[in-house]
Length: 326
Image (cartoon, rainbow, N blue to C red):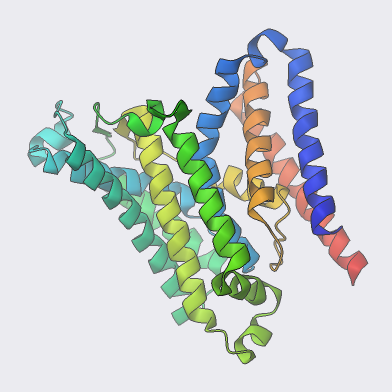
């Protein structure tokens, strides 16, 4: 199954899901408001999936992105509230603190920077200590989540004035959707048209060969995880704006949707294959699938089962295709 066939299969599946929900729930599903809602809710997941695409192409994985999202939202909120003149007692007590543009802008950058630092830490541990990405990110998932709960004793930070990244729009396009498009275009360009992107593919295809060809494997991997962390930080601030608060429980099980979107979009868990176009298709497929199941009043527990089965199917199909090619 080549790259084009995989993407065609994913795109056909997306069209099938949309057609199915349109038939079962035409009144609720086939509305501009519902489609815009799906796009807006896809944006944070899609931005995270863009980073995960780099990681999975290198034959890695990051299980910490959901917990990292919570930590970045908490960190960014602390900065914007503190810069708005709030004392620690007011910040932790949930007192309304009016925030200006520059405090919110700086807090957003702080959230993105927090994500980059978390990703950098993952990358350094993986490369310097020669640890498996699965083990490192499984551990950091617990660390990031624990810190998120410790910051305010398990309570959220209220940022009522912070909403533009979710409800705002530029030229009629929702700001979160616009950010999603910008990230995908930038990440796609980086992956396809730069030496860095070629190094990412080379590492995923054969790390030893890439090393002997002169690629600084450790440096590239550290950058891959740091970039992914920055993308998670941006997604965290969009999620914070959506809830008007930073929740320490944000992003629970979100890594499942992100990894599923990337693999469904054609990335091979064995590394060396994947595109941003496929990731967008996979993200939309998961989002429309969840949207339709919700409209049909199917519980989130059942949705988790469905997503898990889709991941197993996608990985199985990739493995069978790899053996056939071999």
